[in-house]
Image 1 (tube, rainbow, N blue to C red):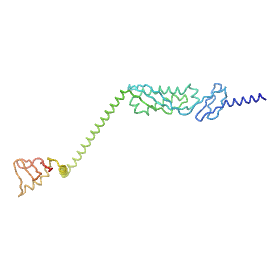
Image 2 (cartoon, rainbow, N blue to C red):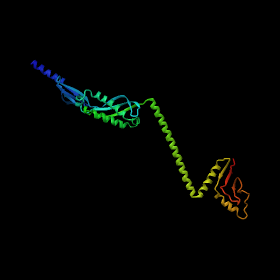
Image 3 (cartoon, rainbow, N blue to C red):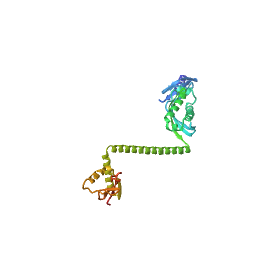
Length: 291
């Protein structure tokens, strides 16, 4: 009786010793007498003590830091680049059976792939088009780790360390680019201003009265500033009514040789004339402001 109780107690102890508890994110790859027995979990699983072995595998996404790598780009620029890789175990049995240490192997593969891919890219592409490079890295690493039961979810280039000489050269390039843009914008402004002036001149040419009104507005603006003396040209069309009135009977018009004068007071109009006494060019108004 005591022997039976001892056997029963031994079986109970053996059973308890063969129980394993696997968390929700864990799976257990079991081997019975050296052969693959199956993937267990999660929860309470029975693994015969002494006859079977259980390897725990986590199914969570793991962030693997890729150490900085010295890379020479396609345009012969030496840079130091590091990255981060996100991976998870898709098939626990393959991750244990097909490769010895899937974490170490995947990290080494990421380093070599990073050097080879960035060596085929130019520096400008590396700095401005990282999404494309990240997609290429992810595709290559994921394809090569697929036989191991590993799924690479993302690969991100974190930092690109440039030499100081290259940083200074890029700063000069950026400064020259800003100066070029400023000159182009200035030239475009001059072009638009000249085009606007041309349109204004065409509009004024269609109606001579508008040009005369513009002259009068300019005279009014100058007179309001209390300047000393202003010489302002006016078109000959504005003087023709006075000339017609001066040539009427009873009008007093001076006929000095070589010039004519119309008006009196602070504004005097000097009319250069020919031998016949008719003006040839536009007259000039001399305005004396009272300070």
